[in-house]
Image (cartoon, rainbow, N blue to C red):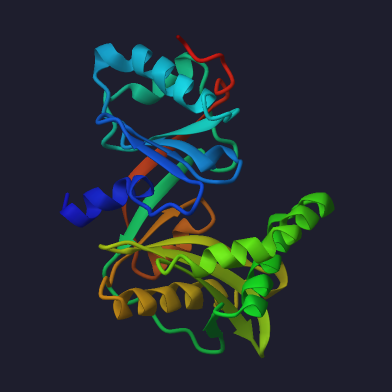
Length: 265
């Protein structure tokens, strides 16, 4: 495995965190908390336990998240995780496959994806464009009215945070001048990590997703890191394979709901 592929496998452990995020590198694992609440926003990456240390480290990791008030978190068990039976041992102590995406393929390309005709892509570099991108994502994800209203209340603060993060960018895809898709990227020192893609159902099949991939490639190349990494689920993996991405690792994502157990003394 090349160095780039090794970095890609556990890229979530390396992403620059926004204000309010926290990372702890414990040597045999990396614990990450993002400043929002959902199972993937609290996660354990780059797992390298010994066979004898698994049960002890599970207790210590659960305590760490419990001390931060996280009700649940996720274990990201990649191909290089140790011991080899780690996923089975974690399920044996109560972790469960994440129902949204139990298996995520880490995919990588170092070649430019194809250009797409008929779709224009713009950077969400104004508040108005940024708000459009967020609203589109909320609509596609099927958020409740109450959750959408809550996020709208936080939108100006989120925009201010976004402006303070030069390593982060959001894009809008337009078909006939109408916004139909959005996507984000976080730019690391070795590659761009693709995240947050959403396409309106009525606009699917017109190339918006592929155009957003190409736009993020162009930005990564402009920044001097012509490589893209993505954690792909069952829906996006076939599309990415068709445009040149290759799988470098498969990761089993397990949800652990023990985060509110009382910390040990």
